[in-house]
Image (cartoon, rainbow, N blue to C red; front, side, top):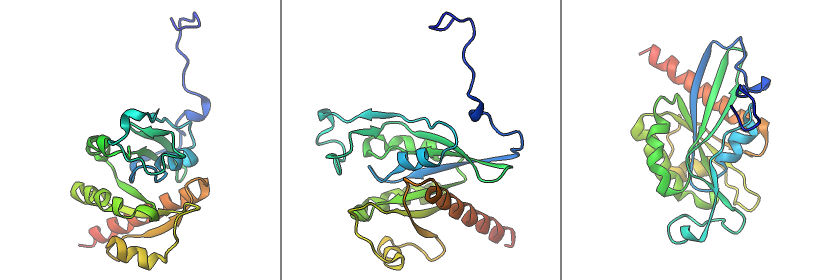
Length: 206
């Protein structure tokens, strides 16, 4: 019996049901440092109500957590974000956003398991955070694309300069995005899917 006195538990909302045309699904992880926009991206692009595990930032985290942007950011992901989006009538992506605070990075290995690919979100104000993120993906053998989230107060650089600064090989796509906009976030995911398709084709020819 639930709290309303009913003997049955409420089921999923109609919009949360998996489309009957779906024939394939893939797990995608959204990674990056603290405050780069992972929760925002999952929320903006998900066609279902996203699951978030944000908790209020408190003084207990001072000296432990990354406090960059703490003057405007009041919550932080402590486990993961989850959403879903259809790329075609047949293909569905399950999106998992990783926690950004370093003390929660031990969760990353579990989130990476079974992932088809990843999006690395980058903040041009803190490029150095991205090296650890990309290194972990490389260690786990997870292919990725890099998406530069354009913050209003963030410096803008040509993508070729950013590629050099991040030491990205030429085959890894790098794109700009605004994760607040659904269309922009979806374009990033489409870039990743095209990249994964090209990798699969090249492997089939070897």
